[in-house]
Amino acid sequence: MSRTPGHIPRRQTNYVKPITMSSVETISSEAFRLDGKIALITGGASGIGAATCRELARAGAQVLIGDLNLTAAQTLATELPGAKAIQMDVTNATSVGAAIAQIPQLDILVNNAGIAGVGNITNTTEDDFARVMNVNVHSVFLVTQAAFPLILASHGSIVNLGSVAGMVGVKQRLSYCASKGAVLAITRQIAVDYPKELRINCIAPGTVQSPFVEGYLDKYHSHEKEKTRAELVARQPIGRLGTPEDIASLVRYLCSREAEFINGAVIPIDGGWTAA
View 1 (cartoon, rainbow, N blue to C red):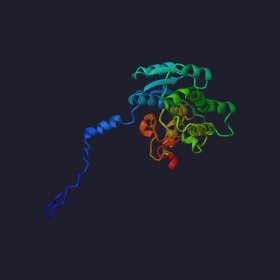
View 2: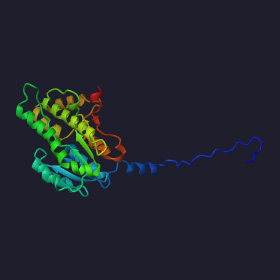
View 3: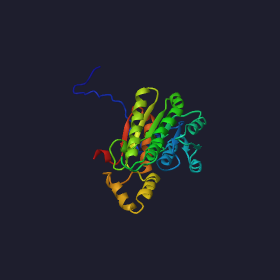
View 4: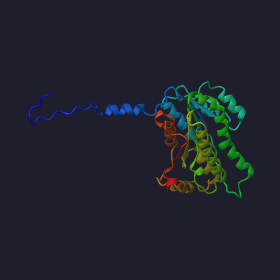
């Protein structure tokens, strides 16, 4: 090709479409979608569970609201398109089996049901310890085992709700720390056994403003609720309690295709508590 003296050939480049506000909105609306997915959330009728049901439904999933309180689950189900309430006692194998038998397909399992426990090694009774372990640990075993064939068939995702109490020592929380440490261990162990068949991760929240925390304040600190609430806020460097919606957003992300490389992880969401 002939060139005139001093001619500099123009370099060819690939055209890149400029990002406009409308394209940003489109990208945002398509992120972390769960269209066509069926999700079971235990303890789904209140608190973090209810927020998770709303968030996954917003992402396009059909949510199955598993809860001992069927009336509350049914009330929430009326708010969400395609949602269904399922009564289940997560500590009872027969109840869990009957609930899972109603589900022909399952893509997402969120083991959220749990209770608190207050006391140290000297004043925690055997019954109290057993009750916390039953609800917080045995239930994860029962529900996950029952739902496992469905999750394997869909190459689905499991999210377990742990706690920072499973990662660090928290005063007067012997049974609760023990139970949440077990949930973390269960998560990692299943991920090791089934690294390509499914994804399983654990979220470790700090203190979240929820009926769970309000129940604790009412039961153990009714005479000094605001003082104790301020102490709960102070241990999280960000300067506030978490919200159920904070946790639900992370659940949604972990269940989405954008999180496909995350497996066997324990993710704190605690306002900086475990970093301090």
